[in-house]
Amino acid sequence: MPRYRGRFAPTPSGPLHFGSLVAALASFLDARLAGGEWRLRIEDIDPPRCPPGAADTIQRQLEAFGLHWDGPVLWQHDRDDAYAAALSRLAAQGLAYPCSCSRKQWRDHAVYPGWCRDGLSAPDAPAAWRLRSDRGLRPVTWEDRLFGHQHFDPALLGDVVLQRKDGLWAYQLAVVVDDADQGISDVVRGFDLLDNTPWQRALQHALDLPAPRYLHLPLVMGEGDQKLSKQNHAPPLPAEEQAARPLLHAALVALDQAPPADLAAAPVAEQLAWGIAHWSVARIRPQSTRRVAARPC
Ligand code: GLU
Image (cartoon, rainbow, N blue to C red; front, top):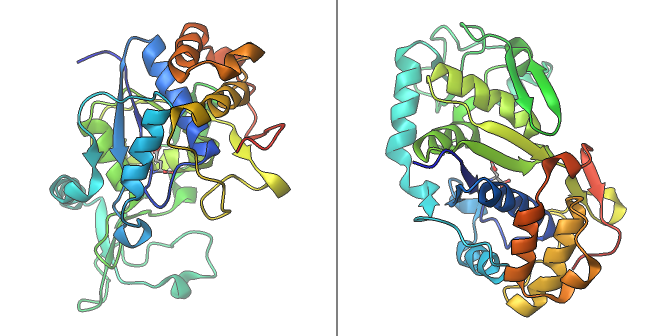
């Protein structure tokens, strides 16, 4: 297995936008400069949020930008057995418990107070599964490659949901199991996920899994200083190479890599070759958000 293995893990709730391109590009360049692999994982654990065809569109968009992944695509909808095995393991260690409480019941608390921890969940009511944050979990710390030392108290994080009441798996459990099973050494993604990382570090510890390195990236803000997102109707990326060129250049600019201006018209393969050769995390300004000068698409 190569020493470095990165991944891009989009939720197919719609097509990719410029913000997703910046995350995919940084992860790709980081992997390629390290001579590592770059994997694609489609995070479709929540089918009602994933319209048919969105995952295909995402793959066509990545290809148009020359962001070719290694190996087979991993689909989270195929991974029930792996998530169930991880949950059983946590339950057997007394680290996970069923919880029938509703959000309304604990609305006056900052985090869920753990009322069902000691088997008090209503026996016939639908139950979610939660991770205990009061058992053997040490303060969660890691060195983010851009944002430096991170430190979180498990008691303030509360008991995160691992499986929802409707039976769907929660992102925190799925991402940890998949990163480990795929042998991911390096996670590169947007700053909006930095405050999810403590859960993932806590789960890695509880499941005795290796911890990847983390690099969180400034979030690209759109008009009105809102994060570019599908909910905010960020325009979709094109799925055609010619149209991808100026956007790829804009993504290199958004990552502070200072590409030459005349590279903007070059084929994506040429821009990526430049990007790999010049990739430098040290150049990225460690800000939680990044405004892009011109409307990128
Ligand atoms: N699926 C998540 C998203 O699209 C990303 C998960 C990750 O990179 O850990 O926002």
